[in-house]
Length: 173
Image 1 (tube, rainbow, N blue to C red):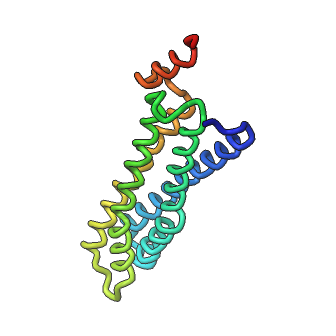
Image 2 (image 1 turned 30 degrees about the vertical axis):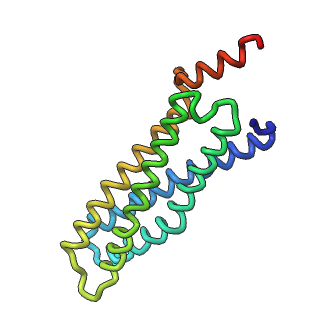
């Protein structure tokens, strides 16, 4: 099943928008995480973690889900296919991995936001949580840059399934 050209372009626009938005939201999250971790200004530190919680729940998670679902729909409804090219499958796996790690870290993000709002700021606990959030946000950003590069360069290399499908399409019946 393939999409008509107009729908394919619309879906591509949605996918690029959600993916680029996701990268930008993670970059903003990372900036806040670094600020929360390194700032000596208590009000700044207290503000960073609840802001990260909002960005994670209401921007990053929806964009990650949208990027993943739209990418999956596109791969299944376009000639690129999900299993025909290694780079398409790698994009899916990296995005799925990043989304899974994100969902597993939501509790840590919530915990850091709660710590930041306590009357007496628990510096050691907040530092530990902040350090984990910086590492995971930076790692997530780097991991999600790989699918972007793969989308631009589209490296050659078809899977066995892709070769078989291509052979079936070009062989006379």
